[in-house]
Amino acid sequence: MQWLLSFILRYKNFFLYFFFAIITLSFSYYQSEYHKSKIFKASIFLNGVVSEPLKNLTSYFRLKKINNDLFQENLHLKSLLINENYNSNSEDKNNDSPFSLIPGYVVKNDITSSRNIIIINKGSSDMVEEEMGVIGRKGIIGIVNQTTEKFSSVLSILHKDIKINAKHKKTNAFGSLFWEGIVPDELTLSDVSIINKIDIGDTIVTGGMSAYFPEGIPIGKVIEIKNDGRYYSINVKLINNISTIGHVYFLKNKNKPEIESLYK
Image (tube, rainbow, N blue to C red; front, side, top):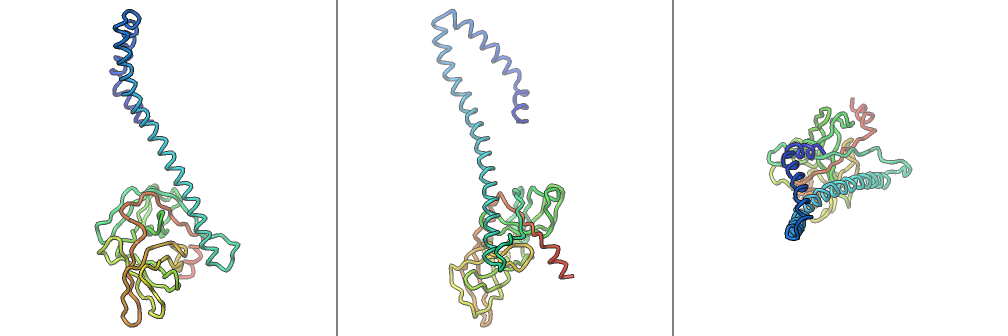
């Protein structure tokens, strides 16, 4: 509402003039039928001029609230989906996923370099930490590499230095997923053994063999398969359009410290 107060203060002289003009017209209205007719027509015009912006303003705030409500609902559904995926892939069906979600919004998104960075409006004060995975509405986004109190820097999946554990959904065949820095919506899944049957159109998902992402988060579809005699090199078309992402979710893994301690 700050901008509305600033607007009123900026045009206070106009509003004062308008106020006194209304008083003057009111006196004229009761003294002349001609003035009554003119004032009535003018009031219809002014009503339209004033009502439309007010209606648009009301709609703006209403849509903003609806959008926020939908985002919160999507956050809840994402949490349920992650728990469902975890339980379907875990021997212990009674435990929930170790991952919880922290919502955020993209404030800067580079897609034109070979090492693209995304800035998100959540930082250490929001419990965001380095090396957290980040997902969007449809699939993976990247991994946090730095945080400040209020913001975080994320290595986009369109970053040449990132490698993500991924798998072929049908066969569970694992490989290493990375971006070659050329086509902004295609990644490469390498080191997949040729003993597995892979077809064009098959789905690639996160493998779950890291502390960044739970198993089963969608990544993309197979569009090309190359065979070197021992391993497949698979071109994957991203499900996410990285250039249009807005709302995102940080993945907080409560087991991450324990997992990392085993590497020391």
